[in-house]
Image (cartoon, rainbow, N blue to C red):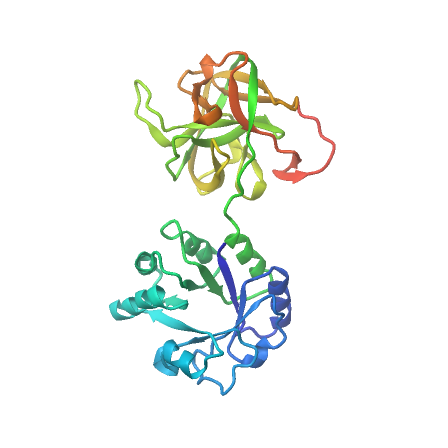
Length: 367
């Protein structure tokens, strides 16, 4: 779980609304320069005092944590000895090689490190994260906006432990919390039984090329109906006549649904460069991956009909070619043209109908 700190030090007119939103969204900490501003904050939120350009106050009030700049306030370890009842963290602004080394040291040894990288490159953050691998402390990175927070959360795959954002308007605390929770929830997969395959003529199918290499038992969920999808395999496994393309899934006809981020569905036809889609493995573990491009081309098509143990019927229309594959139990790779009645394939059964991709509880028949 990524940590979300909201910096209210320079918030003026909308402070009350922003703080109320932050508490409602269960941000992890609110950061203030004056201890008095932390008094109204409920105990469910960590109260962080950060008097960056001011001297330390005589008392720290309701603060749970005090972030100090060693050049102005002194070393956190020394301050801890002086104030044994107060928890201290270190602020480092990274502007050159020396300050980068100071940030690495803080990340390795301090319980809390608040880092500000002056330059837009993320290479210094990568260095700090690598240097702190295995350390027990938490690294909080100061960010300019929610978009940068999303990037920071993913640097070196693991990302910073958290971010500190100074909101400009109400609503940004909600957006930040959503970005911190963007890790996809696992999918509950079921074994579907193929009831038949049939050729359905010519149509357009979509290959989804992502910016990520899929694992051997990983693909995307695709189906003609929102209530049932089959796990389509990536082109990770060797094929005669052509090289592997481990970033690609030959997914299905352009009308098909697929799962994307935050529980939404998208039509394959509306995926685009920079969009998101959900990668799922044979155990149901999932992750959000970025779409690089979608190739829609005319091909002969094959319909796969299957049924779930609950009786729900599932349909998937794919390119009619033996190199198009779906996944079976245990990650078994199955060529679609070789499926027969009784073959087991993996899929999922979303319980809600969909309206513009969002789950909705309403009467709807798809056939």
